Image (cartoon, rainbow, N blue to C red; front, side, top):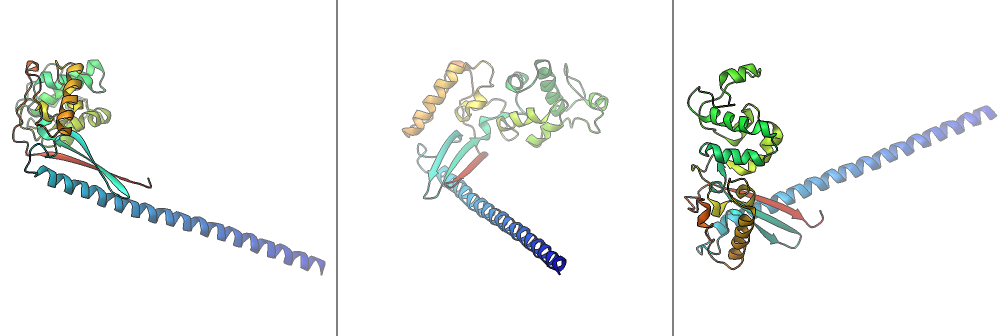
Length: 263
């Protein structure tokens, strides 16, 4: 009889332990589901706020007053609301380096500042030139069909202009870290060999050969002051020999970043 009671007690304790584990697992599952639902809700809210920033950018680009119109030189515009804020940045493609039009010196300036070993910089520049030019002649330290075959690659240079920025990743010697670094600075939509410095972000100006950092900082400060005071964009110092013409400026990149107050 005692053994039966002991067995019953063990059985009750075992059932209680099992129920405790089940209750704990259920509570953990509920917390996880609540966290997932909150994440989905926050993502949806952030997406809506970011889209409102893009809509605002479209409206401000159409402002009839050119001095109040939002600038596509990388300036950041912030909009605050009751429960969120959005930062919008406009970048003109003419303020970037066109990898189909830029000459060797400009591409070299880009690679000099990129996270590339010094001995690899000229090779990457030549490989880019060989990819986009129409012939099979190899630039010094460049790469045409044979070099790609020797590297064990199943493709060869297109010998045509780059169609997208992502195509740069196929160039012999290009790696992910280098591509991610240069991606925001380059374009295939400018159509001009030079950078329109009036519309260039500071990061682009820094890689242009011959530009002094002090000159760049002074110009960025003057450009910011003109924006604050609703004045025209100041020209870049003429002694720099850079392109001040704004061109058509028909292609823009709009970056909209939403920040929720509870984040």
